Length: 493
Image (cartoon, rainbow, N blue to C red; front, side):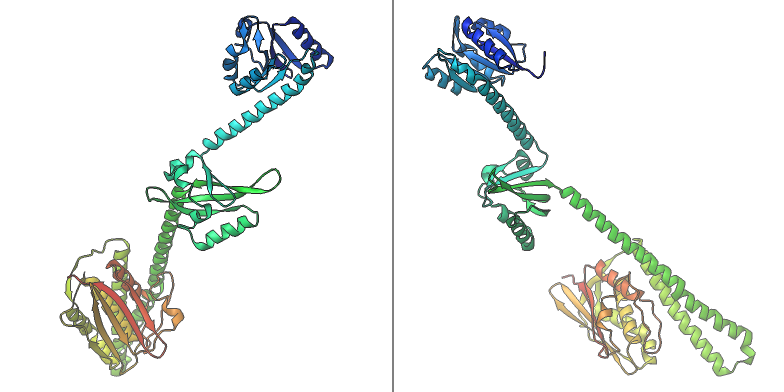
């Protein structure tokens, strides 16, 4: 069969009417492949198994009416054109209500046949349109994306099943929602303003938005909202197409977090290698150089020179040991091998113990070490870590305080938190350098008032030790007016 032809079943028991239709097809060279059936019975036999594009049927047949088989044909989706006797419009109306595509009223001059090609074409086009609409409707309903259609004011008119599946809300529950207010719940006002302004200019908006499900769970969407226009280019609403990207968002954040940790880890390694390569190498070079002088030139040196060199070796040894101790602490902390054992500690006694260790350094510059901590104040902390915090900050304070200065430690109790302040009246720190003090990926070091060396590692350790106690640490300073290092520790009540 020629596939370009319309496969047509004409059910008509009047042979004259059949002949008239054949003549019409021939005279107008219509591309029809016509099959005739002269009765209800014959129509029932012919229709199954044949792929007819359209059915034309007279109402009253020799063995019954077309209403006997019309519902079965219509249920298959094949268009049916009903042809009735003159004036029998009630039958035609009933056929249309049953699902017929169209109807014709017969006339004795067969004028109705001239209308058939037009009605056939119209019925087939309607079938094609209906099929496309049905296909589109199925595609929308089965879409893996969430689809929302609103009126021109943003009021929701339609949601596809995917919206309900992901959010838990039905259309009835969302009908009171406004598209723009809906986006303002968890998103910044700048995002909502951008959506309104973009759509107001007739353009589509695309971006990432955050929402809340019916069960209270939050999720992220990749969202595109576009205006909808009718055939006259009048805006009639909006369509929103979105996808749940929560897992992707969480993965991106996890990757970002991992990258940041990796960056910090690499910065830690770089810092350690830098200290080993420079800060450790330099004092060892000094130790070897002055040891060589004492060893090779001892007999030619004066007593004063020998004492001077021994003093230098002593200072270098002490500084190198301090640096090594910090490196070991930091290494153990980074690898998770530093144990954390908090207990109740009398802070006043701990400060006095640290002051005893630093007294020699302070005396060299006539610096007063003042303990103003309440003798009864207890903090709940790891003694080794807190000892290191106080020792490092106090050591720095002595280093950067000129002769005849002072270093004061005080504490204030507020609820279950103790705020400890270590203040000096030293040289101070420029504001742009304060933020670099506790960062491992920056290299901020400076020499003390007597040229004392430093690696910058001590404050980084202090920062990590304080964070291990869920506390905070920061510095306040002004050049020429001293510095204040403030950190918090928990108090067990």
